[in-house]
Length: 117
Image 1 (cartoon, rainbow, N blue to C red):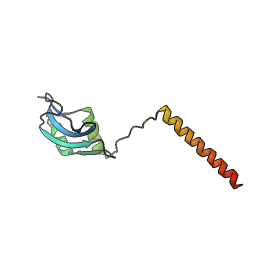
Image 2: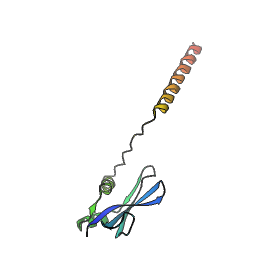
Image 3: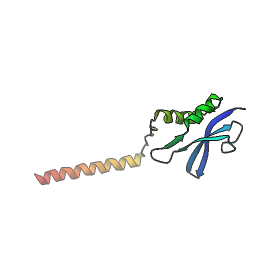
Image 4: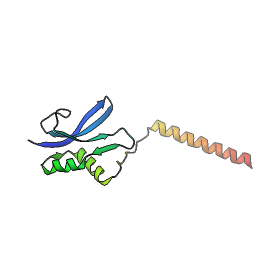
């Protein structure tokens, strides 16, 4: 029996909430599990990572294999490092709008400087 430590998805549509569970590798993602060892909520700011590291170490010593995502969450929980947020790219339209607003602000500042003289 291959035991895995993995994420089980819960929550509503487009509102994910994960449980970190120890499960048989043959069971479905959200199916039956052996034990819940933590929780992960990616929607809060900062992201909530609550993992019982003692239970995780106990299961790993018994031979359980954490998935890549869970291994990353365990490293974050051990080191206390915040999750690095990805920078969001703005669209070309939004970039053009921001540039136009900056240009208008610069012109208004220049006119205010001329009026003050």
